[in-house]
Image (spheres, rainbow over the protein chains, first blue to last red):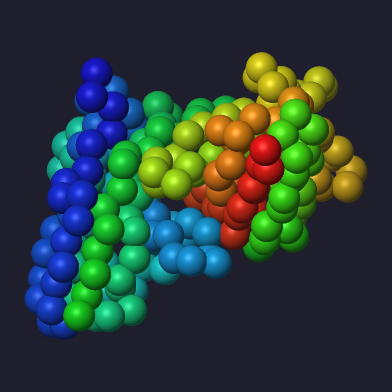
Length: 114
Length: 115
């Protein structure tokens, strides 16, 4: 099992550019989520999904879109990047939505928006 | 609303001593899960320990234990016999199914183990 994979590991964008951060898991997990990590802010939930075809907003959804067409993939789209979106992005998954399920994290994507 | 508070931005501890990292949470729902994660300087998030709100006993995993005081809404992480490799950022997190399955994190505590 590869677990949770994220690509790319590093990315530099110019303001206004768009891009998609990829996230995939091979554990047949129902629940997937995206977080951003900024210094002194911990991890903040952007969007999450409880299954294929179902997504919902987290704490900081503005400027980001997601979709979940398959169980395995949960891409995060930045339609028009802004410097405020400079951050480290983590994707995570857990088997189901029950409170006992641990989240497994990907290695992260470090994004810089100039 | 859900809230996780970690009041210690940074801690310095001598190697081999025990260390307690504080975490308090706020929820009105009876069913929830509490987690601790470690983030070393390499950046990955490593799951350490879990405590369910209905668990009668405090969780333990090797050198890690969770001091769960439900009435006080605290879930402190205790690391026994600290090692240099324990130097990292530590995050407390809560999962509350009655709040749309959202999992929220505290802002973290940076632990430095001194030789």
